[in-house]
Length: 357
View 1: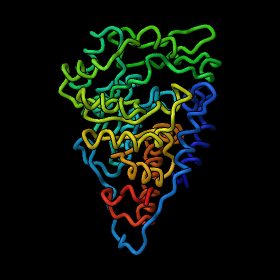
View 2: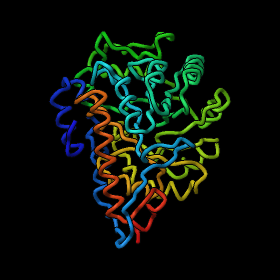
View 3: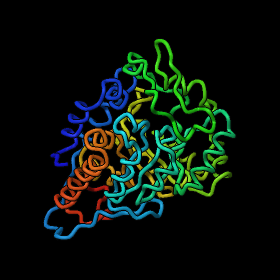
View 4: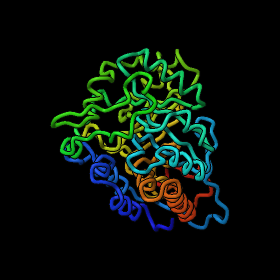
């Protein structure tokens, strides 16, 4: 696919998706201010570029938890890829593989984890929601580890689902042909049909554990050999708590603006979190990344890499595997140019002074 930028891809996806699917992917909570804030915060940051640096050769590669990837951009966990394309998460993981990066599979995927890992050519991580039935969660963790996933990404910012008014208006649920495949053995594979409510919100309220405490990180580490990352942190003190409980990584995230609408933009809180963590865990960031220059800003402020969610879904809706690869390819092309124009030859040369000289 030939596209100039991610906004063009977004427009194509909007034309091709059914309205209820578009609303599910695109919406934020309440007034969707946090959704906008994530992007607007990047726009307020300037890059104080260096000049007369030899940038004839540039290397975008980096490592995340020991996995070497082609660029500091990976695929964030997002649910229900089957709404965008018949191949669902299979197309998405293949597109990520073409881009040479990590794919994070959602608990709420429409494709079984074993099939996704089998289709992958790069590392697959698994995003985990904790169910009230800990036996179900334990079996799910064992299953994803056996399937070959390389890390667990524990989402901690969703004790209940944020009120996404578009989904409430649409009474969002999955079409009959789609299911939450990884929860079939537990009988938790279908969203309830509700009156005047989102079926996903009802699913969370009925099945997921709203009583989680920091002990859950230690519990997960006791039942798996996989590294555990904690996703959904916007406070420096919470980041420190995650490190103290043994988290190998932290995803600075506000759930793409889909939980608490009053949340701060992730790029705004990243510097404080990076300072508090002090290199004791690897930091990833999601929320609002739409240009390669945004990636430079995140790296300069302390992130190891960024995760992108909605742009991958736009690519999936627009062109399946090729569309996902195109979305990631656009960001890679922009990032390479931003490196050159900022006087950076590799990830190590992206330093804080690019933002605060």
